[in-house]
Length: 439
Image 1 (cartoon, one colour):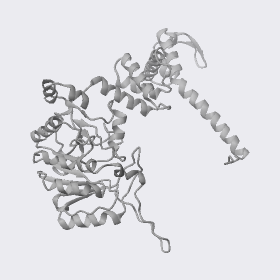
Image 2 (cartoon, one colour; image 1 turned 30 degrees about the horizontal axis):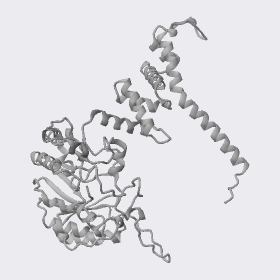
Image 3 (cartoon, one colour; image 1 turned 30 degrees about the vertical axis):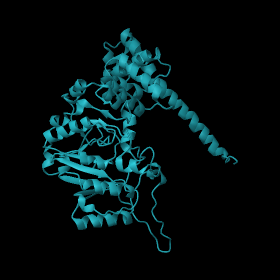
Image 4 (cartoon, helix red, strand yellow; image 1 turned 180 degrees about the vertical axis):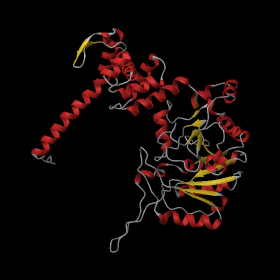
């Protein structure tokens, strides 16, 4: 294919744009470092006291560094010290790592979130090693989060757990931590898919092996967890239910009493040790002030456990292949609230025993790293809605569900089709679908 010719005026504009952007890049890259080093020298050597000529009143000198910063450069001394700290850390990094922070926004999180220079340098080394070609402020923030999680080591991976003796396992499960629930405001699980029906999440266990392409939790785990999406027990989070007070809003809005439990895992996956599940359920039973909402794609395993009254037990059914296993399992599940999450709905669904559930949530899908945003056509979910309504189920429709019809007379109607990236069960065996992924 021949290249598309660019007209001369457009070519000149493009050339000028690139030249000006390169100058901006150079200025941004070096400004904070050079300014910080110069300010440090001016401060340390008290050069600001040197007399200088002015257009107003002849000879004078600044008596303090603060006065110098405010009158000469029109910023507070605190801003000067920020630049000095950023330049000093960059100099320290330059003695160990070849790739240096390119902007102050790369250095600031290191200074704000880590207390010692050796930790800051170590975190930057990890970021540079693991980062893509372009290091951004978000890449730095995520890298620091992973560094802190690995440094504080508040978790045990599944392999580490299996290597422990019985006494060490008991000690971990009896640990009294200081953690609280995570409010659904992006404070920890940033960029997570909105959990509308629960204002809190609690993740004493993380990781999953279902490998669903639309999984937002996997994307978050790869950003923030050193073990990524491998199963892990965060034992210091176990006592979070007792540490978190119920807000006053819970008296008028039940979602403020609802806790999505293990939103970053499938707690009932075949690979999860029974001890982890029992430890979580023990905390549920001991904290009746909360409603704890569970979801699994391994509905069969739910029949192995007794659930406290404040446990809402649910299963995800995204396609027809999961319907039978869900219905058969929930004929045996013993729980006060039994619910169904049809999210994302990736094909029309038909249930023979929808009456085995008390509550149904129907929704589409937010964009993930492997799949696009998906809004379910009304002709798919309306029959399920009608069936649930006739059976008296409580119904929750997610805000990401609606796809607005845009039909015109004389224009053929294009039937909805699920994006190919959502169709993932063709590679799974029947046992994988019914019994969960192998451990």
